[in-house]
Structures are given as C-alpha cells and as structure tokens.
Length: 391
Image: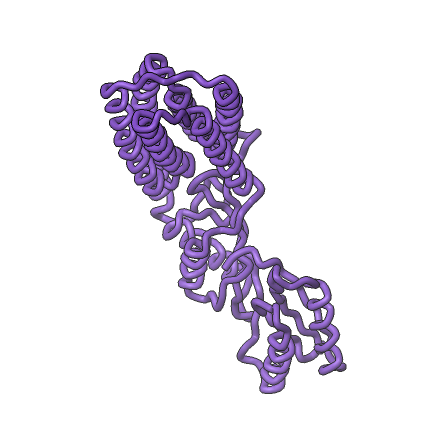
C-alpha cells in the first residue's frame, strides 16, 4: 500500500476526512498565529513608546522581543502553508517537515534577539541612563503582563489541541515574556522606592532568558529532525489495531517515521500461522494496512511476515521454552519474537531486541547465539538483532 492508496471500502472516504481535518488544523494554526501577531504588534508599539518616554532599556528591549514574537508567528503561518502542499514526484512523502524547518528559523530569530538585547544591556550597564517612570507607563506594562499571560495560555491550549509544537512553543514564550515584563515592573517600583537603577542588569537577565529559550527551541526541533522515538501511546494503539485483525498472532518491530506533525508512515512485522498460503497472507497484509489507517491514521507501507508453528510437536515446544529461558537470562533483553523451528532440518529462527542501555548490545547478541548452540548442538540457529525503536 502506498501513501496514495487505502485498500478498504471506506478508505477513500476516510482519507478525504483526514485531509479535511488537516485543512482545519492549518486554519486553526493560522488564526491563532494571526491573533498573536496582532497582539504582539500592539504590545510592541505601547512598550516602545513607554520605553522612549521613560528611558527604560528593559521596557524597550521588551518591545523588541514582542516584535520578534510577531515575526515568529508570521513564520509559523508561512511554514504551515508550505507544509500543506501535496506530495509530488520530488517529495513523495509531502512537505510536512517544513513546519520543523520553520521552527528552526524561529529559534534562530530568538537567538539573534537575545544576543542583540545582551549587547544593548551591557552598554546600558556601562553608561546607565536615569529612567523617568509615570503611573501611565507602569499601568501599560502591567496591562502587557496580563495580555501576554492570556496570549500564552491561548496559544498553548490551541497548540496542544492540534499537535503544533510551534504554537506550544510560542505560548510558552509568551508566558515567559509575561514573567519578564513583571520583573521589569518590579524593577521600576524598586527604582521609584529606592532610586536604585537596575535597568541594565535586568535587561541582561532578560537577554539571557531569551537566549536560553532560543537554545531550547533549537534543541527540541533538531531532535525531531534527527528522528525521535514514536510516542508510546501511538505505538500501542497501532499495534492493538494490527493485532485486532483476524489471523495476526502478534505485532512486532513497529517502525514509524515522522514526515511532519500527525503524518506517520512505517512498517510492522506480524506473526501468522505457517500454514497460510500466499493469497491468504496477501489479503491479511492489506487488511492490516487498512485497519492501521482507519483506526490510527497511520500508513503502513510494509507488512513483514513471521511464520509461527506453535501447534507443532512437544519437542518443538520444549525447544522454544528452552531458548526463551536462555534469552531472558540476559538483563538487557527487551523482547523475543518471530520464533520458528523446522524439525526436519533442525533449524530455528528468532529475533531479539536488546535495549539501548546495554553497553555491549552486540556482545549480548553473540552470547545468546553461542548459548543456544551450546544447549542444542544438533540445531542451527539464525538469530536477528532488532533495534528497540518503539514500545
């Protein structure tokens, strides 16, 4: 099954529904980003005026930060639009990862803003200006704190609902800005009460926080680009869907690749009775692909087959139990599957998963092979070492 086909009667209707859902998701992201742009532009204008009138470097830097937030929201809109482009010959898996690239650009903007702010703050520390606060300016800053808190809460809520990391990050950034503005307000009150000038130092603190936020955003996005372990809940739901197909005795080696938010494609291995013929296996594979797509929206491009003969002789059952004891005697073994033994040829096949915590995964694998051959010298073992890619 390819990304363009679903082999079930309701498959095309379901695909149309999913495409409609993706379109609605894009519209939600764009609307939330447009709201963030409008709010940040208004806040930046107010803060710029207040900063100029009071001579407060911290408030002025806060205005610059609001403008960078507005630019980030604009890039989110552009990235969402580009990511929604349909797949083509050059990019057969679509353009969903553009959302991650836009997040990298946003992180770079945040880092640049942090560096620029730090430069201005150091200059203010070396040559401080006396700020001139008024009740009006302080009221505007206080209102900005409330506004950014509300904007941050809205963006995070919408981002989680539509699985948009960019929106969630934008909301977190807005909440952080609110905290920074609150600190600026506190510094103003300290100045009015004691005459102490903390603007430059506070600006430096703001710069460090902005820079740290940019580093965190960049690290998280690059992690997704490199490829992360699929969410445990998603992998369990996909395996449950696969195992619900009549004739499937187990689902293993689920490998899912992320081609953008909510765009998963991959492969899975299943255990089936070794008496099934090719036409039956073909029908079973198609049913598995359809079930995974219908229940989870996941496209399984490949379904691998493990033959199993659990109904074999008592000798084969004893062999399997003995091999399992050997395998599970090793601390870092996470799973054993795909066991198949041919009593006439005295050959046995199975796969093991050794978790990544094992400092010598290959050593554990070789030890299992050697111990099986030693325990059953009349048998020839073919052991596969699988990676622990999903739960």
